[in-house]
Length: 255
Image 1 (spheres, rainbow, N blue to C red):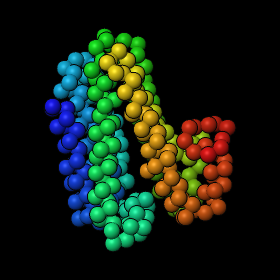
Image 2: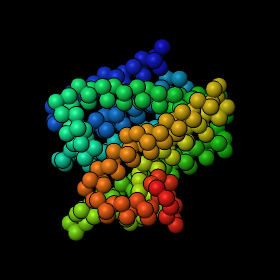
Image 3: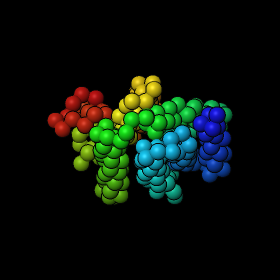
């Protein structure tokens, strides 16, 4: 019952996100709240259900992921114009923007609740810590560090006045059009490895499967690339032809 209460708490958290974006007139803050809310819920679920070294390990890694990503989004959002995706929704939805945004955020709360399942299974596997856990930590570390590198590379590129209106095509961005999304997805692969040996361990695969669907087909790449095509035009189309959309491919690849 306590786990269910933690999951349900995500809905008022995203209700607060809706209120905040309305007050500040900047929906970019909802990404920060979603990340911190899911991270806090994941830590709570791990510790409540598994007072074990694995539970503590999973809770610590969830916290590290949420803090790194959440603080980055804070730095990107504070004092900046609204994220182009949300600005487009504001234009597209018109007078219905606030009501549709509320529904959108409730869907995000439900998505976060679903993503607690792999965290729970990762924390509650009964087997002793071993090689699989070491592999899971390696996957998690690679994902968090890789996403941080991608974010810093993009921030440095955008900070140079001469790059205004151009497309970042350096570092990790030369082998994937969305390396930050790829590493975010990779992070979710750590939980099924942690969950090996748990009852219904297969359900931990919901994390990477669901995040892949969201990032590649729903709320990640499609709206962002539509915005980039509107703002960069042929420059971005050429980038699409040269560089893989998601998985890093050193020799390029089809979108």
